[in-house]
Length: 356
Image (tube, rainbow, N blue to C red):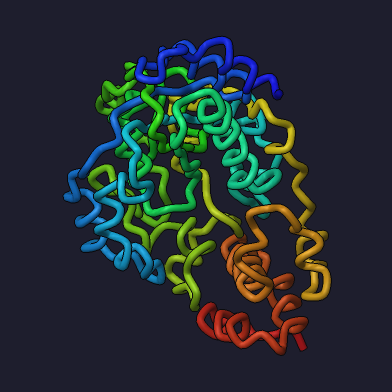
């Protein structure tokens, strides 16, 4: 029996119809290194107005959002029989303060969340372990499903409803205690968990517009992100050529972007990731540029960057170099990538010719 199972065995009421106290859930979460949690009834249906507005704004190559819009409004359809939703958050910041970022501010940069191992698997296993511990001691037939950015779920709306934070002007969930450098994870379950609201949902942005002002592509408006202008979208989800006008203001970002979070005052004391696997070393620009197709998968094994593939990786580096005015290196990259049509097309868009 694992420590989690033993804890559940001692704490879950013997009466199979009794409500499981939140203190039980809290201890199971903390045993998995999860410090922020809340429990709400699994909604039958969510208000779809915000999501409809996002679709109207445009979602570019993320066409699955259009296909899954009905499912996103009905969380219980993800697990028939689910009645409760455990909402959690896990810090991923590598340092105590944004100013202490391990990357060179004027160099090639990637989003902090991608510093270490891919969070999907690490976080989902923790939530699944909590579900297993509850199911093992509960009524026969209890079911659960762990969800970490892996299913059509309106994560931020649900986290706000659970009181884990408010939606800031950068469209991210912000907590007054831990800021916004956090992953969100959920456990849908049929276990009769006691409801518990975290109580941090009050909007505290006030008159601050630092994130909107800092965004170089002007992708933030009305507490939502205009996907097709967002550096994170363009470097991670966008399949084609990035416009020269947007590329010019990338400020060296080659995978994701943290500028709106760095500008947020609530992130000044953001806690570091508790799991060392979520923290990692950043290769130098020379090392990044030296990666070739035959070693790309090995270099980024188990990390989020691998999902964009080698071709878009090289496109992103080209755009990042261009945005920093490092045109000689951009030309060298183009010259070393004659077989990559997307990279060559990106060079044409930027007006950068291959060296030689």
